[in-house]
Length: 396
Image 1 (cartoon, rainbow, N blue to C red):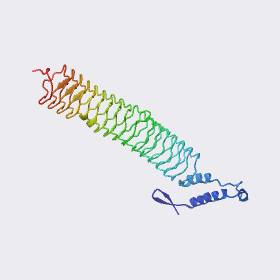
Image 2: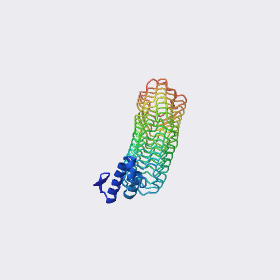
Image 3: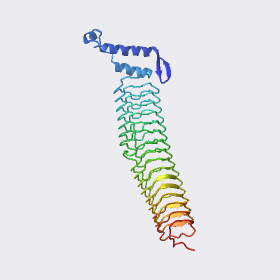
Image 4: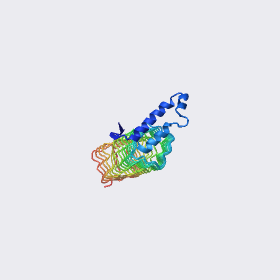
């Protein structure tokens, strides 16, 4: 006979066959009537299945489906062990080594994994509900569709781990390093993400609206395509280089956030607060910014188009920014600085430019009806074929 670990066939030793025989006989004997059991000296020499399984694990590291609940496994060397579908609920694994072990569909509910080595372990569909994984080294671990609800992963190292579809309801991930993880399809209800690093992580399509805490989170170069961040507090976060294509940021607080060189095509920023945000060299093509606030934001080198009705750009810095063809009806650029901005064919109906600085801007074919240029010097700006404007503030 052969034992199997993954796709590799391993020869089964004589000891392993003996343990399997004992395991089988113990179950048979325990099902016999008590009188017969006494005759077989079960009382004085009981065969306890759990003890046999524990001995088998220690000697062979091959114990798929074993009942090891509440077992004392402290400090055991179980690297590359086969514990597929094993019951380890409540087990004490403090200081044990289960790196690269197979724990697919294993039950690790409430197990103590303090100081356990788990790097590279296969934990797909494993149940880790309430497990203590504080500061755990789980780099490149395979945890797809695992249940980590109410587990403590604070300070854990999960760099490069596969967390696709995991349940993180009520999980504490504060201070954890999730750089480069694959987290698509995960559940994040009441999850604590304080100070988590998601740099270069795949987070596309995730719903962050029910997250407990996101202060201090890092999203540099992360994939947030079509993510739902509506109403989330992202103040001051570093999201530089992130991909936010089609993301929902309706009503999101992005004050003073770092969003330079970010791809935000077709993102929704309706009534979002981007005051003081750094948006340099970002792409906001086809975005919805209706009612958004961009006061004192840095929009240098930004390419911006879409529905920008009633957007507040007061005090913002727009240098070499492209707004060509955008709908800016009712927007405000009070005290803003616009230098070499492309506003060609833009709808600027009712826009407030009071005390703004406009230098070498392109306003050709723009709709300037009811626009307010009080205190603005339009000398040197291109106004050919601009529509409906009374521009008394052009100095010769």
